[in-house]
Image (cartoon, rainbow, N blue to C red; front, top):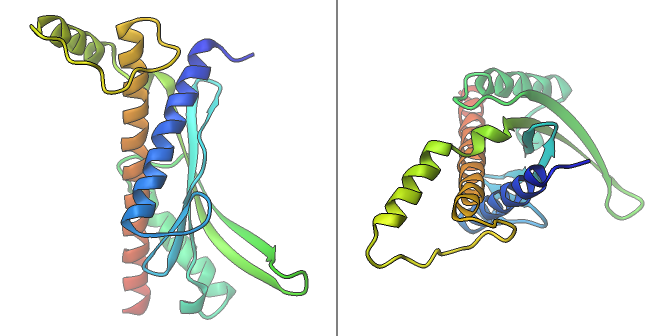
Length: 195
């Protein structure tokens, strides 16, 4: 059974991921669902979930089939992405190549290969007691207290509200960095293969 902490952290981490999806869809070309297209590659950011004591989400990018000559090239492309991804500042806990077959009009099938990266962050890494204490101190020293831009539903105290807002912001920052790292990895690998 989930604890209140897991439920609330999951909710606010998911809001952070949703914000990054919206941001990327505005910045690049929007596609259906949680996907966007940049430089002829489709990217997707999954919904988040709390597993054990960690927040998890996946990001993926389509392998550009039209630029590669066959299955061997696809696997080489994936291997190169994997090599670059292992050097990311925030490393994924799992990197895999996924093959998806879509039946678009019942008579035709579209086969696509994706690079899928799984990220997992301990719940306690999503906020800091020190940061919360500093913000509470700042708020108490203000002569005219600012109205909080967004109150976290479910938080009964100022500290709880700040913790949930930090969970949302930290998840946003982690997801944004992860997707930008994957976009840059695709650029690097494409340049290497083309060159």
